[in-house]
Image (cartoon, rainbow, N blue to C red):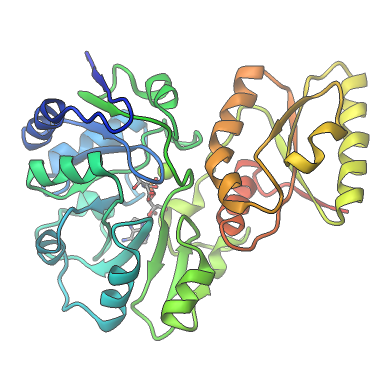
Length: 347
Ligand code: TXA
Ligand code: MG
């Protein structure tokens, strides 16, 4: 299929391209668009045939439900089959538009292909002018997973989208790199205590300030079954096997140097995922820093690009320093653990 690619320079939005993309959505096609988290691969959320094209383009298992993106509250009410709870209203007031996805009971308007047969639907209002313009002009809610080939790191820059999806969708709208860099937080507020099903761009600390008690889904740890179907798949994985080293900072550096030199002696090319403070500790290896240890937002912003860079460097093995799980560090470590298949070495 021939993909039409539109590139917008910063603040230079081409309204005609968005009009054209909106028409493609209304006619049942697929459009990739930027959001503040990662790029999304969208289709009309109200039409099952359109939605099936998303799964095809990504090679995504059909039991993994999609997030429905809206641009106004009428669309929200059309998609949900329950009255708006006080908790939902609070969350929307604080975090929308923004990187928070809320699970609601679904209305009949949402086909089962979107929700993988669940009677709930995941909804968010993205904080991106192009995304909001596209949804508004389409006049329908847009179902969109991250615009990567299933299993690969989510795309945070136009080049990632082109590499994965050129020729597989009708239109690509791209602008700069995405601001947040990890996907939205998915929250279930159906029980007394809200549960984070996927950590993401809105932190647990921020959610607790607004809602009080908030738990994380126990199913996020290895060996248990997550409530959010998508969390059970291997994800974000670079081509090379990856191990995370966690513990005292000096011991972590020592352990990585020990493992890396053994691998190098065996003729392997070693990649090291680290932080600015440590990036000079590994001379001679393929080192990528995700920013300062003290800045989890920077780590979130840089992580997926770093994982893709290791593929380009064609490393044979990757050692990654764990970072603190505070603030955006929780989402960063969740993605890192999944990229490493939960291979964690404690020192
Ligand atoms: O930031 C994001 O959320 C990006 C951008 C494009 O909006 N989208 C994204 O979509 O990350 P995706 O499909 O890669 O991840 C959707 C996650 C999956 O873990 C899925 O299982 C979960 O949301 N999910 C969707 N519907 C759900 C539901 N009804 N109940 C529980 N989890 C659900
Ligand atoms: Mg994804």
